[in-house]
Image (cartoon, rainbow, N blue to C red; front, side, top):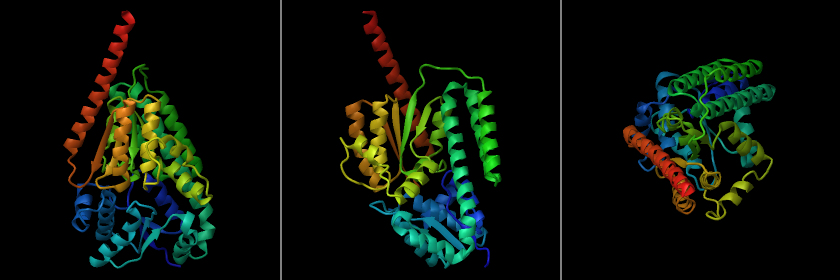
Length: 376
């Protein structure tokens, strides 16, 4: 059978393991160039204004690939529920067709309800070698997803305990290790890269601090994971000395949404319990997680919560009104950043910096008040 050339959209570090997965299966993966303002402008030119940001950026990804390379297929994930993401595969397919790109556009629907369809989509182009190559493809994909997530957790945990210059070095080394992870195809080498990262990070001179500010990042998966659309908010907070707790990691998402859902294991039960005082029904997307983790952040005495979402995202807009109530009742500052193609980086960064000032001043006033009462 021919070796089909396949392209996919970018989302954070997912291209690292998805490229390996497709390559091991027998495809030739063609990745779009890194996301820039040009990507967003190109996608926005051909999409409805009311469409959310991921659709526009994804379409820009596909168009940039089609302009410079010659893919045979386009793969994208599907979805179910109130979130409009489940419709975007068909929307993008029709837009590309109207622009003269009439190539197969394969939407991989959630295997919990579409397992047979998912298998048919792969065997249609790979034949029998799909089953032969699948075990190794899954293994390298899973290992790369886990290692990249562990690397990010190590970076976010260590950054607040370093000086400003060493925080910059930390992130520079993290990017180098990501490149090394991307370039290897051996699981043994992945373990060695992670061990090397642990050794390098342990060598950085730490400045243990008792007053570390902790911020939880919640929201819609694409805007949380893709730094090009959220103005690298996670890195910026980390470089400011904030301990960032991200609530979405791609390896955890794979485990929950693909493995546990397929096995019909209710992994969301604890989240529903946590959100129950404020949310009693399914609202789609990551709305439940946004509410539940905001409640958890308040319960665990975080200094603030940052919600990231596309403008007009129905689940996140619903969640935003709820977490506003959580913020008021539980006295935890919440910053909601809703992104679209018109969002200015300078404005977003000003809001982030003001939010950091707010939580720092709030903690200083609280500490001062407690100190005064203790002395009296």
